[in-house]
Image 1 (cartoon, rainbow, N blue to C red):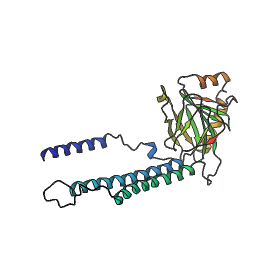
Image 2: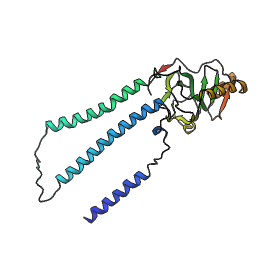
Image 3: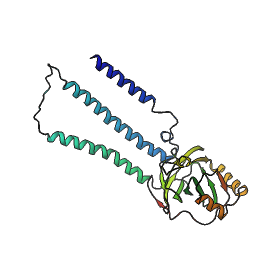
Image 4: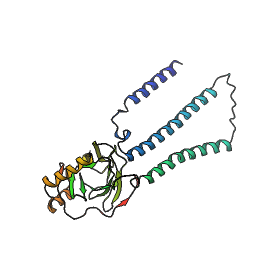
Length: 282
């Protein structure tokens, strides 16, 4: 008995230590959605979490019930059938329940995934298009409408949908702004699409969510969401003050492996690094 108490006490300490060491804090971007895409995906996270929590609670309750009911004591009157070969009723139950659980997760996930293929019809403006190219080890952002290019930082208007066309000239990466929504792959010779929106002006973290070899830890960038008047002012200022990007410098940025500081250009060569846009999942 004393040995069991000792084991139980140690198990309790392990559980408490695990909870304290999870690193949980209020600064988890995925759990603090700042846009409509992230908000819908956060709803899926909540639904999956509570569904799994319900399953875990039921399993632990049944575990305790069976341990108590079929405990090895002289006075235990619980029915015991050591020669039982099978039960169609039990097999049907433990087959049906996982199927229901999978459907409860799959149906809303598929529905949300398809709903996020394009900006909502209620959007007041057409998405601002930004071409995103991942290279080793840097992010290049081109704004076709204004002809601007930035490296390793992104500026977007708040309260306006943004359509990202994603490709790569180096290793495959994954474009991810956790506060604004899910991720999408950057792959060579392929262009995938992703739309996001920031509900409020602010500074957000962007990064690659796909391990892409040595230097992967440098594949991060800053996202600055400005009000629409501030964004237009920023575009005008860049057009007036930033240098134009030459072909030679463009090729150096794209095809030279290595880190790069944040750069801003008022124009970029017409040579496209992105292919035909095609929408893909979250």
